[in-house]
Image (cartoon, rainbow, N blue to C red; front, side, top):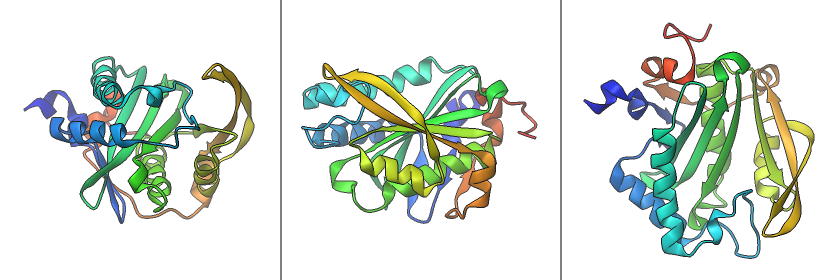
Length: 219
């Protein structure tokens, strides 16, 4: 079976309302269709790379190509886990957990998007909780970092709910204009102090070496 060679296909995170996992090809097509419908208001750009400015068909194709690319370039030293988010069985968006030199640094970063029709329901908070559980409880991360542009209050609020703390700013040029991103950092100790929604993780052990960890576990 293909999962014998790529065990990430069996990795699944579950919260009270959501399931996060790698998609089948039809599910990837559904994610692409969702991106084509829209991810944010056109006057605002929440991403450093403005991929949502492309026409709907190109945007959808880019989603598919990006998934294939990140699977094909995965190494234990540089990985990005692009998990499709299912809400009540329906594709709702994407949650990414990524790292470089994780086996040494034990630091992860995250990114996400939701289809417009799935926003405003608390899904973003719950799917972030799922990957933080994977990072800290599953993979033994020491810290998680994130960021949000100054006009992206919803993303910033999700991070604050999970205990992230301000960590300075960064400057970018987006759509030809300077923008400021507020960096955030969540140490493992702070994450452990706060309450979390229940998250179950299945299929992780066979994947550990792909994350740059010893096969016997994260301790």
